[in-house]
Length: 317
Image (cartoon, rainbow, N blue to C red):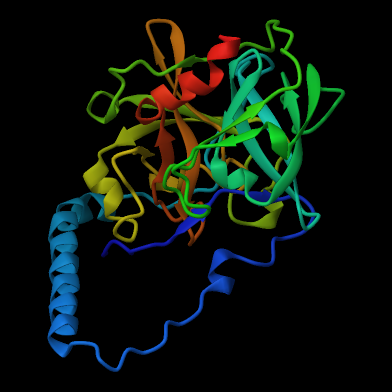
């Protein structure tokens, strides 16, 4: 079995209507340059060939392990039902897009008045409803509080390109501070030492209201969670096109169909250390081939963005 080079799928879930236009729709073929130097073209092609060969050789050592992977099973995908109050920092987002679509995402309460989520969740968004303390998604009766925000409350990381999973991080400012309880609490941000090398091989926890699998029948409104292992960057790179996974990401093992799925975008990846839960990642993307193909889930790594997060939220800490 060879590793497929996959494009990314941001783990959004359209609640009512699928989004129709993507950034690819506006792409125009560049005009041909008749003066292009054939030698330059040949050099570029050679570089691509060498790059692909290097990628193939690096990934061969993982193929034997992948061949031993047991059949994929469906079930966040592969998760368990969360008990009330188990993830008090988790919030649900119903995001209103400019075209009228409603999109489902997750988020994490990092201060009493700020939610951290994925930037791609807020593309073309005009506002959102945010639900805290809930196990049922977007259920006012099950939630501790409901907040209404507008696009003026969105703070997207300045390095986000507007598509894809690079620098895929954003903050949402709430109109008032949350009321804390056993169901609603903030989460600690990852410490500086919780970098890639420290996290690799650690068992961490992903939570969200995303689908349980690729079939429409696997949609759920109940909060799920999943314990997964952080994998090395070298292994993660083998599943995606060059440049999609960077040093600012962290990846979790997706074998046996265990990982994030549609609707989990923006949700938390958490490491439990010395009886404290630390937010180490924000769910960003997975394979465009689906949630059950065994590919890793990729997250924005919190330690890569700590200065920016602290600067933006300092007034409410």
